[in-house]
Every structure is written in structure tokens, then in C-alpha cells.
Image 1 (cartoon, each protein chain N blue to C red):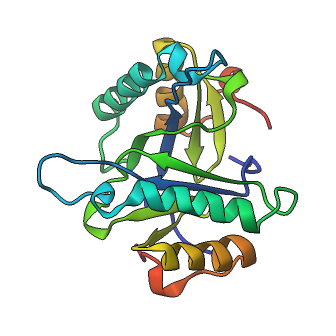
Image 2 (cartoon, helix red, strand yellow):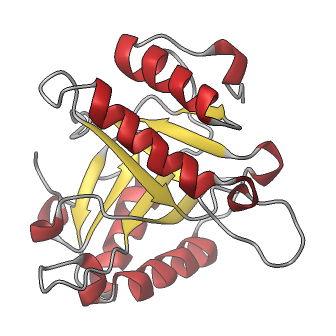
Amino acid sequence: MNTQSYYQYHVFVCTNQRNDGRPCCEDQQASQLRDYMKKRVKDLIPKAQANIRINNAGCLNRCSLGPVLVIYPEAVWYNFKNQTDIDEIVESHLLQGKLVERLHIKD
Amino acid sequence: MNTQSYYQYHVFVCTNQRNDGRPCCEDQQASQLRDYMKKRVKDLIPKAQANIRINNAGCLNRCSLGPVLVIYPEAVWYNFKNQTDIDEIVESHLLQGKLVERLHIKD
């Protein structure tokens, strides 16, 4: 199917909270880091430059690699741990279109 | 960037609940229909045939068109109202790779 993406970058951050002792993204402040990412994008990237959406999502089922986010339509997955990682994803990937190798999850 | 998608079809269903009177997907049973979609995919499509994930997501910001879902990496958006619509999206798009014209949101 040949469609143009409504969002240039549509980011989904796994913010799933498990309560059964298994690892989950929300155990590592995924929601807070998603909120931070949203703010950084708003501060750094004018909407006229790129139509970007940063969403929470349910369990992306890559828990052992988490916290994780995925950027569509490119289907690029990242692990992140803190604000420094988020800054790099925003400033490199979303602002300049450059993959962040050190955080990239290779399938 | 040139990567292969981890999920062949990664579906995000907006299940956002607003409490300010504005329209939102969750007012129209989006979560229930997402659960139904997940079950239908499990029943109809063996994992060996297609690696599919059906996720809840926060507000996708297309509220007036809702309930909405988006299928990545294709970036195809659908409006749906009931189980019949979900059945058609599962059986046509996810099972046969055919766009459902009557539900498709053209950007």
C-alpha cells in the first residue's frame, strides 16, 4: 500500500506497568521520559519543520530490552534510560534524521 | 533509514478518554473494540503467517474522525465504529493485504 504518513515521525513509547514482578518499561520511568521527550520536541522542533507526535502505548512486547520506543513509519526501535538518551534521539533522529547507533535496537 | 519492521503490522488503536466534553475515541468503545480486534487476530492469523501487534495508544489527535487506528509501517489510518468494521479490517487488510476503502481515512 502506498500512502504518505500523516505524521513524519510518529513515536510510540511503551509505558506499560506490570504488577507480576516481570521487567516492564514503566518500572524505569518510561512515562516521565515520554513527557520529557514531548516537551523537548515542542521546544526544539517547530511544527512547520516536522509533524511529530509522541504517544504513550501499551506493552510493545520487547520488555527485556526496555524501556523501548519505536519511531514509525521508519520502524526504528530505541532503548533509552534517561534524559540524555532522549535528548540524543530528539536532536539526532528527529531533528537531523540521523540514526542514534548506540541506542538503536537492531532486530 | 532502511530497516525492516519488527512487526509486519503494528496496529495502534486510540483509546484516549477525554473528560472535558470534547469528542474522543474512548467515548465510542475504542478499548472494547481493540480487545475484540486482538482476539480476532489471534483466532484468524497464525503468528507464523504474520507477526502482528495490536496496541492501545494515547490520543492520536484525530479525534473528530474517531474512533481511529493506524497500521504501521504502512501508515494507513482507519475509522471504525463496531465489530463489523474491525472484522473487515482484520480479514481484508491484515489477512489479505487489501485496503478497506470504505473505512480508510485519506489524509
